[in-house]
Amino acid sequence: METTTPAPSGMNVFSRIFNVFVSPSRTFEALIAKPDWLTPVLVMVMLFLAAGIPLSDLIQREQAKAARAAIMKSDRIPQGQREQIADQQVEMMKRFWVVGFGIGIAAVVILFFIGALFLWFSGNMMGGKVSYMVVLSVLGYSLMIDIVASAVKVPLMAVKQSLRVDTGLGLLIPDTDLTSPLYVFLSKFDLFTFWQLSVLVIGLSMVYKFSTAKSASLVVGLWLLWVLAQTGLAAVGIRFS
Image 1 (cartoon, helix red, strand yellow):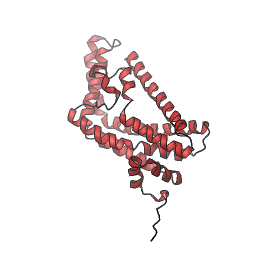
Image 2: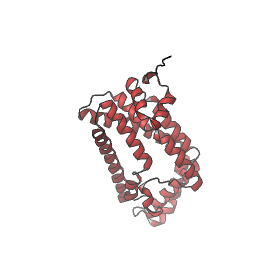
Image 3: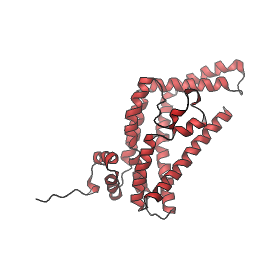
């Protein structure tokens, strides 16, 4: 008896997520037929909670350490007042930890929507014609690679008791230079990031019907602009700290 293969649009959410890792084109075929941006948003929030709650003490300690170090090195604060101001800053961070955690979640979601907007606008300017919701869905599912990244990095952070777990060029920078623009730049060249970018190139080449090279130029070009923007912000932070 002849069997029929279910239409891609009939894939359930678990199949879509699974296929991102083993056969991305199947997931993107389903998303072209039926966009889904809500699932990626829910996964982002769950990953943020899954990493943030178990590591909350470590995150607070490292944030407090970084804030104290910045204040103690600041030439804008009289030396005799630095210790007191550092103590006040750390206490305030502890008091408003939950608020900061909520802001972090909101920032991740907002950046997701903004990133998709840049991809959608740039792709349409390059000759494509796709709805924003489709691009949003493709970007969201490419970010599912963070599931594996978190599964690898969060346990290592807990074991090492350090938020620094590099799986890319960030390994070249010593622990003493983690706030340097060079570290911020190199740390973005990460194995999991390259995996995400590759999946995103596949997705956009399918939805826009671009060649792989054209889709890669769109994705890598915007990603490099984002990396340079973060590096510039790090340099400005050092300049005014």
